[in-house]
Length: 427
Image (tube, rainbow, N blue to C red; front, side, top):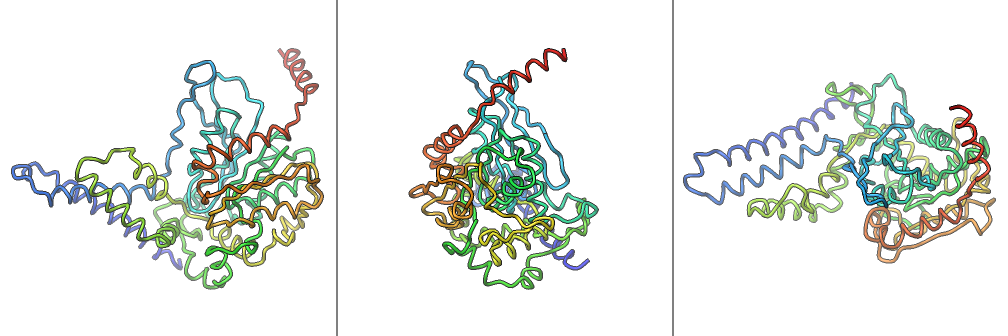
């Protein structure tokens, strides 16, 4: 039961702030106060509205918000999000555009398990749907996973990716964003040795810490400075009785959010104060720039303790991927076994989370891959978020990634004809 009280205390504080916001909002809207307009009550109502919304979003999984897509035929087609593989800690989902012919490109977008939901890649998915069949790893909130499902660490994460790639087949192009980049590289190397026929055609790694020591940031410095004992004592708690995963050890989302916001506390404080003033003056709206950003940013999920601790210890402290010493299920993975999968790295020149140099290190590890199948790109002036979801992604990086995918696609025409004959015979 250790730390369960701390977990519940954080949830109590969040719940209390949400209640205070709702109370202030209701009080300011009391009809009797309308007799004599009072700017203070107007401000109180605005503060309550912003506060209630902010703390309420912290425990809500955002919706993908992708309902329809306009195809080349000029008609709007419904988007169905269908699970392809369902697992305890995460699913493989497909964004199926109904009524549209199957696209030639098949992309597996590997989302990070780093405190936010896979919906953080909403704009990335939206930009790829028009040109490809898009599949995404949709990780679950650890607080909703019963203890009976067991542990989930970096090795389990890697094996999940291996199974997802096998399910989609060899004509898949994988794009890993940020945190999962090193594990996706390891999963590809694992398949190269264990099941070569299931390897993807290409692998694009975007802003990932393949070698965190190649160019140190505050994140890597923290990983080396803190001890594993300190992390276990300060970051790990047990899920409270309110959730299905009661008793599971996690790195709580609310604690992660506190860390995120403390790094830029002045910026966030100003943003919330400005939003209160806009709301008081009637200038705010349901989907304005502030709400659109913070509805996603504040929605956090608990991370399995084993995954968080093993990531810090094995990826950052020991550099097992960087040193090509990563072990999965008792098997040492050799990244040099990748000989046919084209690999491309993308970095942002101003990335302060995975600085330039950390991701491109993957190319040096692929010793068995010819230079013709290696590529890299550093986007000038781009930060971490911009290289996969911002303007830099839309205008520059996305076209380069699709061009790389097309250059490394193999059209297996004989098999396609064979399949069509089989279908006809089956009918």
